[in-house]
Image 1 (cartoon, rainbow, N blue to C red):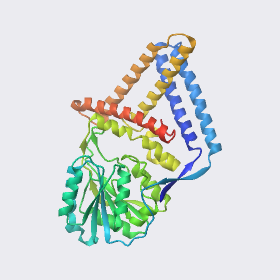
Image 2 (image 1 turned 180 degrees about the vertical axis):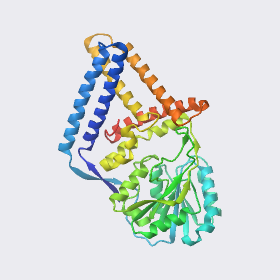
Image 3 (image 1 turned 120 degrees about the vertical axis):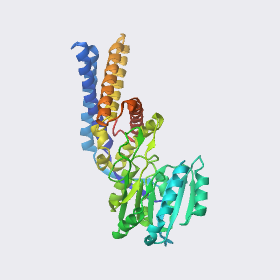
Image 4 (image 1 turned 90 degrees about the vertical axis):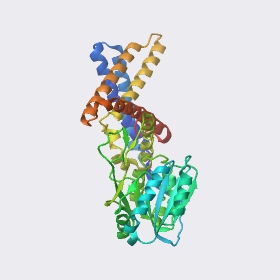
Length: 424
């Protein structure tokens, strides 16, 4: 069984615990300042916030110093569903399509492939492998019908649900082509996509080519699902099948479609491969409407931020810098930080009141909660103006952002519990 390995510093969790603690310290200081601003300098709750901030800051400094002492590195192995095998390819390329409950989108994707085949005659002999990742809708039946009339040889592989990374691994394992070309089922290729991807991989040994994924950028996130905008997007990439197997494939611990592309890129670099974005290989990513539940589930995927840092250490920071710096206009990450700081302060205040046999400062805590809510709402108004969200859509914009904030906070906490404290 092959493994995708990444550097893991023994002191990494201490390092990020320290970073998170200092971030909470700053949030607590701001909460104390707000409380003093509205209740005067003698606010007992503000004093308690300063005490908690002092303790939290001390924990952060000690954790950072400990990370410098402990900071030796070792290598961890993460098993994936691939084996090192030598096989003679029957085709020049294999188009790998992972799919889950997207029957209609799979029809559109296959239609686009059929339409572009005349432009792909010089690409060589190819096949299509569709990996149905445990769909519960009509996707398996639709895929089977498409395979019957497909111009390119097409096989449908069905497996229990393992997530997008597991589906891509299975696609490469089943591939009989020399080069595997992945495209997600919610994407539509242009005529230049396949020739440009194959040319990039064939031009240099050890290449991994990422397609240029684009969409209607007039869409207003988070009301619609759009590509991440990252330089390397895992929705479509190509590489030699032997290189994919040699590096251990996708880490299947990334069961959701989040940070899996960043992990793929960092793993490829660690394996000595050469990633690049092929601008000519354009892939259209249609806009999909989302409701609050979809947006909440997207926020939950931020638990994979912690897994990415666990596997790749400091090299992962370039991919989650927005989380560290609070780069979202809507204030998702700063809001999560203040929520954690507020909960920490409230827990301390209630515990201190119980030990001192007195009433907790519930009125002060309520006032702080209202201040945070007012501040967050003002941030939404500013963000909506900057993103030119219409008045009719402002309500949906705020609800979507609230759902995302809640999802991010729970997802980040879940990631800290599952993979170690990286970012709160």
